Image (cartoon, rainbow, N blue to C red; front, side, top):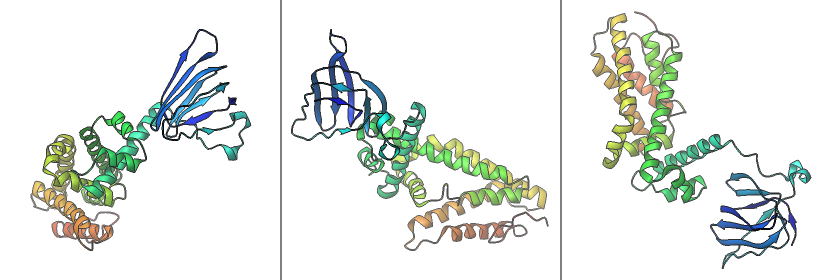
Amino acid sequence: MDIDRPVIAPVTECRRYPQRQPLHGALKLGIRLGQVAGRKFGHVRLGIVAVTKAGIRLTGLSIRTLALFTGRRTLRLTLRQPEADVTASQTTAAPPLPRTQSRDARRTQLIEATIATLSDRGFSRTTLTEVARRAGLSHGLVLFHFQSKDNLLSETLDYLSEEYRTNWQAALAEAGPAPEAQLAAIVKADFSPTVCTPDRLSSWCAFWGESQSRPLYQARCGANDAHYNQTLEEICARMNAQYGYASDPRRTARLIRIMTEGVWLDMMTLVEPYPVQEAMDTVFAGLSALYPRHFGPVPAAQGTTP
């Protein structure tokens, strides 16, 4: 049996055991389906190009004799022509990502799968096995990146919290200096497609609703929440100072936050939830009661002065 083509196999382990003779050795592939071993072959030229979802790509492999042992299960090896002989239409493997980028992308993929699992199953019924299934990856790869369910949930919460913070701060930076424009921007940010999706809202509710997750939430999100609340209070205080309103800034900021979280909860729990635009208009109706000279159900492009 002569092979002089790259080999793709769903391997988890790849080792070469050199013998005394040059260009001779033994290749061992460990796979999930069973044990595969190559024995007594010569003229070996082995290079590992990349570790991909499909497995480890081996190139320059020339095998004179190959013995495969797969136990009771079937092993399928996909053989491809050398790169010089492969046409564009025949190429199926994309170039590997840089190591760091690939690692970050894989972690993000698993976190997004965790968000979807939290949305469907809740906090207590989210498992590493289900996350791996949704991501299309192995259970072992989840453990490799996060070590445990607690770590995965903690980093998922960090991811959601940072995503939320980045979203509202970007909206605030684009709003300009007027406090009414900043208040409109920070409220509208809560209904941005970046953060206001069914999966994300359900995940937030999962973390809020489970008593066992509250210490985790407070530890991971407390600083970001405090920063948001302080920013909102400062905007409300400037509304008083510039336009003559007399409401308590802390309580007013709390009311605004509760309005937003309340319509979020409605969208997750009502039998017939209202759409995102209706939810945002509801909050702006509340703003019109707090600041009647500046807000209506739909925010103006520019703030007005009394």
